[in-house]
Amino acid sequence: MKFRPSRKSTALVGGAVFVDYDNSGAQSLFLMMAYGKSRLLKNMLPVTGKPEFVDVTEQAGFRNIRLPLPQPSSTMTVTASSIC
Image (cartoon, rainbow, N blue to C red):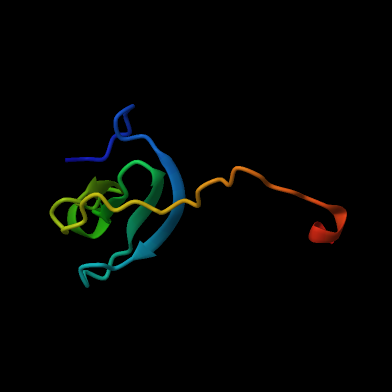
């Protein structure tokens, strides 16, 4: 299955890492989502000769991995001395 963004798969990316997760010699892409499921996209260039990524999140055992976000506080005070 090729990765094609849709409304159900679209989320805010909180971080991205190129990693050779399967020791294939190719750098795959792990997208850490702040809102939504994170995705592991396998680099298929060495396999098929085409510059494409395939979603292997489930096959690699990554399920429901989400980037934790800080909870907003009810009060926040900013002064000139706190940012200088």
